[in-house]
Length: 205
Image 1: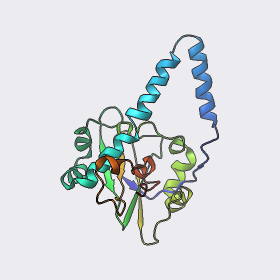
Image 2 (image 1 turned 30 degrees about the vertical axis):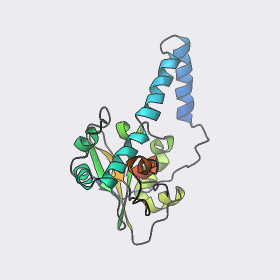
Image 3 (image 1 turned 120 degrees about the horizontal axis):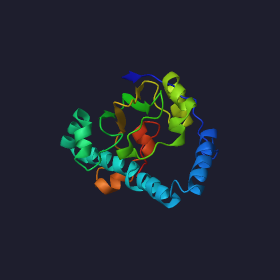
Image 4 (image 1 turned 180 degrees about the vertical axis):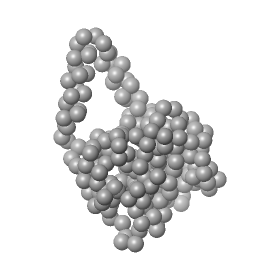
């Protein structure tokens, strides 16, 4: 279900919020009592940040940019198309890909909690889970994009997609101009995490 959302998004990532402080305190207590292994926890987090992370989504996007047949498949059956590249699993069982065009820009939010496609984007950033982003993305999407440094032409429609436990969304950003000679690996390096959420754009070559 698509919604037009705004987001009063706190883009200062340097501050540690109350939830992060509580999580750190809980982790410390559990480690001291021997209930968790900090090294194992670090390995799990590293897995999601490096192997199961935005680099996977970037490869999906790059393949769609160079392979028209794959792009069509991705837009018709994202779950199967993404799984064909080896990216599937928890939080990615039911995927939908929406494509940005000069006329329409897509942005993803989870208004209820923090539903997020882990297999292709890794762990959600702190701001994605914040109440300001979740509320403003629906009310003022253009303002939210401006907070992220993205200014779109006045005539560009902005559509906001609300991720749920049943469906997770991934944005297929527009391929940057002047990249016709680049291969998939070089193109994947231009794809940013935020461009696949819709709060950013790909890097320029």
